[in-house]
Length: 291
Image (cartoon, rainbow, N blue to C red; front, side):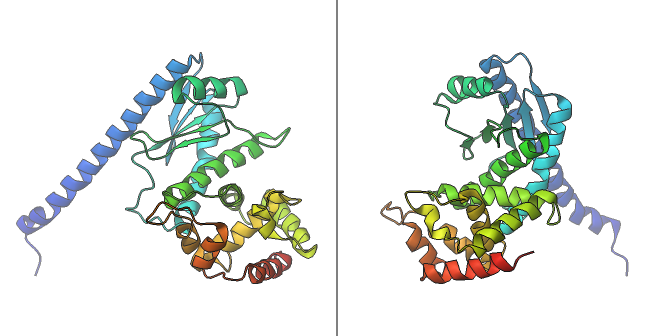
C-alpha cells in the first residue's frame, strides 16, 4: 500500500525545515567570518586583499585569486584525511563555523597582522581555534627557495596541525608531535606515490637503517634529521601499526584533574607503550621495511 501524500508531507516537512535551517545557519556563519576577515585585513592596512571560500575554509590572503584558489585546493585535500585519522565524524566539528586561513607570504605583512590584529608578538603560525570566529595566521614559512607547490604543502601541514590541536583540546602537545603530524598528513594528502612523499619515506628508511632514535626528539638537543624522524614516528603512531592507540596518546597528554601536565613518558604509557625501547625497535623495523 502506497503511503499517502499527507503522510509524506507530515514526515518530510520537518526534515526539510531542519535542512533549510542548517543551510541558513551555515551561510550566516560564512558571512560573519567574511565580515571579520575584511575588517581584520583593513585594520592591518593591506592594500591588496583576496577572500575566497573553499570547500572547507575561508582563504584570506594578499596573493592573487588564482593562487588563493590553488591554496584552497591544497588545504581541502588534507581536511578529510586529518578528520578521518583523528576520528571526527560528520557531526563532530573541530571548531565553530568556518575556519579562516590568513595566508601572508610577506614577512612584513605577517608581522603587521600579528601585532595590529592579534596584538601579540610574531612567533610562527598563530592558532585561534576556540574563538567565535576561528582562524589561523600562516606566515607561509617553508624551506629555503621552496617552490610554490612546496609552499602549499607547508600550508596544508599547518591546517592538518590545527585539526590535531582541536582534537587534543587542553593538552599541551610537543612540537615534534604537532609538526610531525602536520607535515606527514600534508605529504600523504599529495598521494602515497607522489614524489615528495616517497622521498620522505626514503629518508626515514635511511634513518631507521642507521639506528635512528625517535626518543631523542624530546631530548634537549634534537637529533640529526629531526623533522623526518618526527614525521615517520608520528606516521607510525597515527597511520601505521600504532593507529589504534593514537587517540590514547593524545588523551594522555591532557592535564589531570589538578591541572598537572603529564610528561611524554606518561602519555606513551597511557597509549600502551610502557617500554619506549620496544617502541623504537618497532618503529625502526616498520620504517626500514617501508617502500
